[in-house]
Image (cartoon, rainbow, N blue to C red; front, side, top):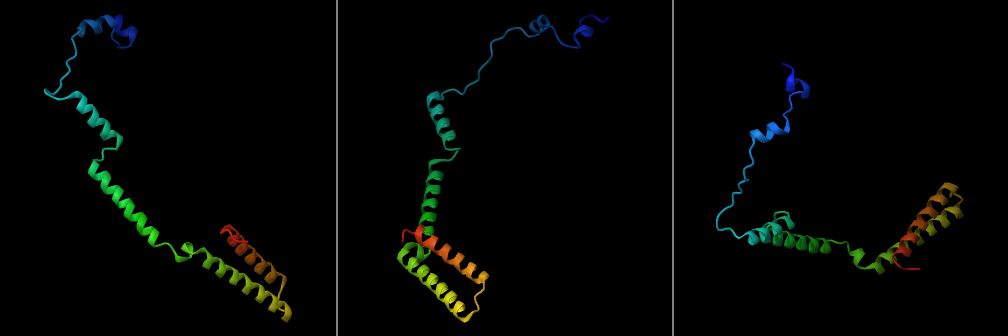
Length: 134
């Protein structure tokens, strides 16, 4: 009673599988009249552009161009005119140095004030150098 089922734990033997499933040719159902090469090209294009049609890709390109142009218009004026920006920064540096000199002459400048102002001046000088001046 144990026989094959007990010995193999319910698995079918290869001979039984072949007997139950005779070799029959697999039927491939295709639509009549379809051009296989044209279908391949269509699917290749579909997957190349993630399913987006030519019209959708054109709309996205146009949107991106408009967005880029709008961002260009919205740039701060200082970025467009670096000389004005450099002049402004140099004026700030001069004002800070004058303030520090004035506080020293009055005897009110502490070491902390001096460190803070010198750090601010150094940061602005770094900005000026990064803009290509000095």
